Structure formats: structure tokens, C-alpha cells
Length: 198
Image 1 (cartoon, rainbow, N blue to C red):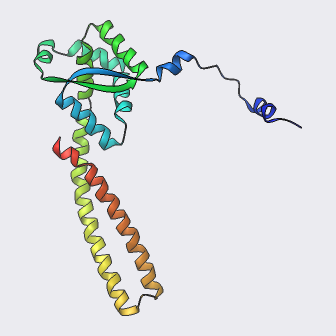
Image 2: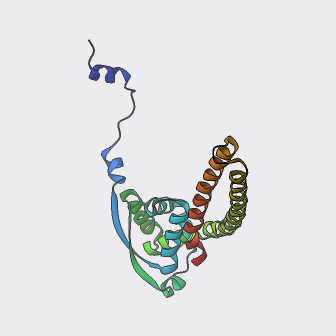
Image 3: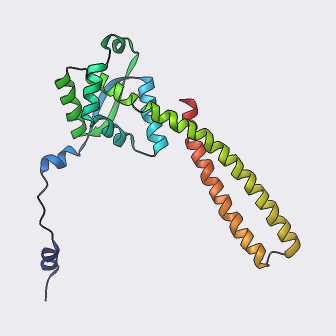
């Protein structure tokens, strides 16, 4: 009789072993930066609108070494120092923090500047989402009108055929699903309100 360990051994695939350094790179750490209110808000709005954790978004932006190099060569230090900034602490992966510090050292650029300008890369995405949000509001309003007509149809069918009629039951099921969909649309619109205020 074979044991679970023997079956597990037979099923295992020979792969290179992962390193403890790679696993430690995934650990979360806290890092504080001095950023403009606009950058802080942009990161928050983008994360909320896209349904992505700020940590994941931050990691994605800061691990793009080519963009960090480009920022380091393009940013204007005089303009950056005139920017009104506040301290903000973020949770990010150890690997991201290492990558950011390495880029700051290699390109001789302030770490805060690399973060500030990396976050600015989100602005076109936020602008696109704002446009979509306005279109979503129009679609939601049109769907609400559709739902109201369906509710009126259901009421008329109940009056003419009675609650037990199969047509009424089918319409009732359809209108229940439409109401559920409408509520989902309203939740999406509510989530997008942060775009209107940005």
C-alpha cells in the first residue's frame, strides 16, 4: 500500500528551487515619501477605480526600471523642490523598495522625485476612466428608464393575468434580475465619484 508521501513524490515535477531571497523580496515593508497631494490622491483614485490595492499599483509603477531611468534624466529639480509636498507612508514589497533605492542611487535622483513622477504616469489613465465614468452614468440612466418601463409592464401583466400566470412569473424573474443589475450599475457609478472630484 502506497502512502500519501510516496504518491506526492511520484507526482512531483522537478523544478529549480526558489530562493529565500526571492521570497523575502515579496515581504511587505513601510516606506515614507514626501509627495504632492495631487500624487497621493492620484494613486488612491487609480487604485479605487481599478479595484487594485495601492500596494500592487505602487509596486507596478516602481518596478519599471526603464521608466525610473527616463524620469531621472527628465525631471526638473528646481520645479520639484518648489512643489508643496507632505509625508505619506506606503506599504510596498521589499523588492520594490530595493529597486527604487537602486534607481535613485544609479541615476543620482531623489527617491521622492522618482515616486512623484512615476505616479504622474497614472494621470492619462485617470482621465480615460473619468470619460468612461461619464458615459457609464448615461448608460445607467438609460438602463433605469428601461427598468421603469419593465416594472410598468409587469404591473400591467399582473393586473390583466394575475400573479400565478407563467408570463407574469417570467416577467417578475426578469425584472428582479434587471433590478439587481441596476443596483450593480449604481455601485459602479458611486465608486467612480472619486473621479469627478479629482
